[in-house]
Image (cartoon, rainbow, N blue to C red; front, side, top):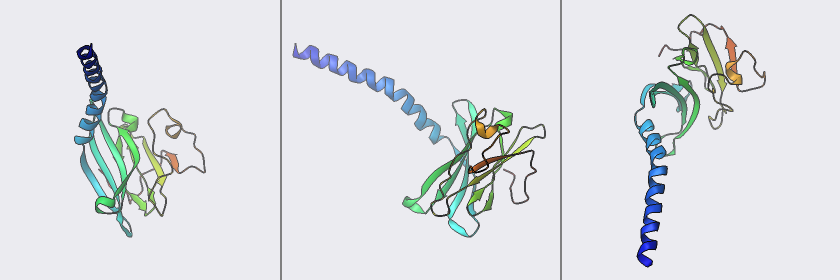
Length: 165
């Protein structure tokens, strides 16, 4: 009877490892295949960097926008935006600092419509109050909350401070 219990326990643990291991391995593989394509210090803040990474979310090209605060092992990474390169309305064209506590990512649909997002960061921690969400959400619509930290500016031309990626 004891051998049967050991076999059952082993089978249950192996099944759990397969079920849980699949999604975990996909997440680990996804993060391993990103490449930094832009890394710029904030004006007057060498400890704060705007980082843009390019990679793939299974088969879709993505661009991830982060703010890194600190140096070495004490670096904190905060996600600012996640952009899907397969969706023309969500393709990141530019990202740059507007000032030490403000980032301006710009999307371009390829047909002349550019969307400029203004993302304010905490001056002390670098943490954004919100991130740029996926298309179809409130931040991608023409409505916005005037007090929110993420604002969409319809059809605004890109300011000169932004760099083309």
